[in-house]
Image 1 (spheres, rainbow, N blue to C red):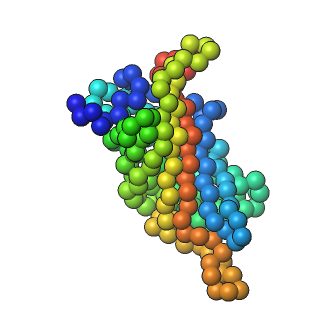
Image 2 (image 1 turned 45 degrees about the vertical axis):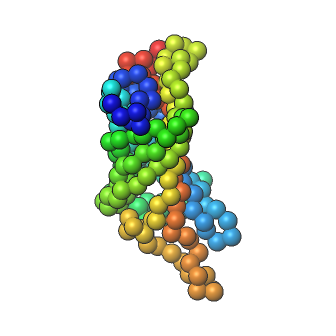
Length: 185
């Protein structure tokens, strides 16, 4: 076994605890940073002796930016086109440990029907038992993508001619997983 392969937890299937997890995004807009998150996320982490894999999805219709009309605009064809592409998906077949709890994850991100390779980085916690005896691990991951690579091209030029919305979007995932079979303890 290659020592660089991440064995972040005991072998088995780990299911996302959606109550204690979130997926956020942020992008430069006008004179500041525009932020939002997805309310409906799902993920599964599978660990065996050789590797760890991760699959996650989010429901585009669950996007939340604290303003109903703007959330609706983000679901329109100008942005995510939730009616035609109701889900975002991330899959990773090879999670690697960079050392001291640091991870690097090469995977594929699908947005608006376009799949591109991405690398996400972050940290992983050591396995632990919560107060109810449920075994848990945490993954905190982030990446920056160019939204136009996924066909999200909307912009509104400023009077100076510059775009009001940046192309680079940072995606942040704070994920807690519980060992399968222990979710209802």
